[in-house]
Image (cartoon, rainbow, N blue to C red; front, side, top):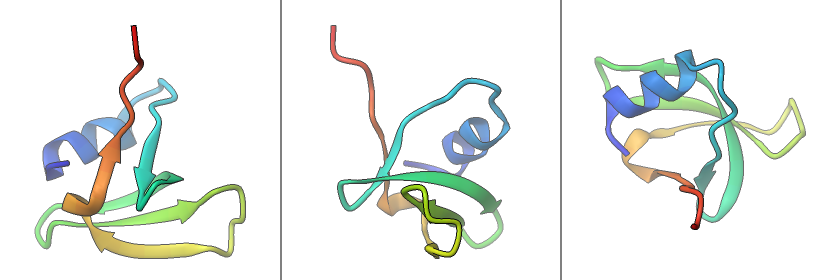
Length: 63
C-alpha cells in the first residue's frame, strides 16, 4: 500500500479491511513524511505497532 491510500483509508468513514502479515488491523495514524503507519492488530487496543505502509495490504472484496 502507498502512503496516500493509507491516509485515504484512515480518513474514510467506511470500514475498509486492511491486513498486516495476514492479520486484520486498524490504522490509527499515518506518518506520511516517513511512510509509516501506527496500527492496532485485531481487537486488542494494547497490540499496537508502527510499520511501513508498504507492509499493509488492503483486502478487496471478491466478486
